[in-house]
Image 1 (tube, one colour):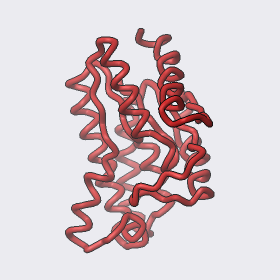
Image 2: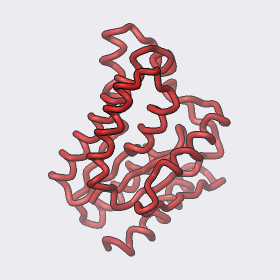
Image 3: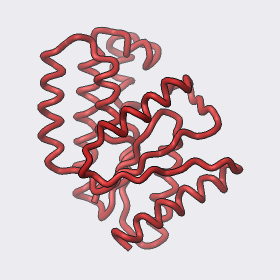
Image 4: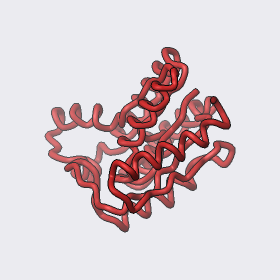
Length: 199
């Protein structure tokens, strides 16, 4: 079973992914985590083309190729984890990647068509559930993702509409509380949803 965590940059997906996986392991589940794969693919492009940042790459003529490679790596890691673990939690989904592909597309329509064809093949095996993380109240800046609030709101809006309607989506609220308590509440929310499915 693959559970996707989706949403805008800086919405706490990585923190929630790790906390939720930890909670499920405590309860005896064999859980695998697929980390945000763009961080694995970007260094190869930095080395090959000299990009200093992800925003710089996204303005380049190789951005569609980059997004296709991120998509393929996501699928590869999800497939591998799905074979090894009872439950898999992904930090981002292919629909998040689709947003970035469409938003930053570099006019390489042949490559974009190839991307869409590969996406259609993957969609034959869907996520069983997606948690869409609401943007956090504070600004999260780790030097990799965008901190522009308007852009993050756009991401959230569009990603939600890219997820096929047949995939169950639960919006994880953000909480205006100290960080540890807010994370705990998010985990509790997700666990209540999962209780109806796996527990």
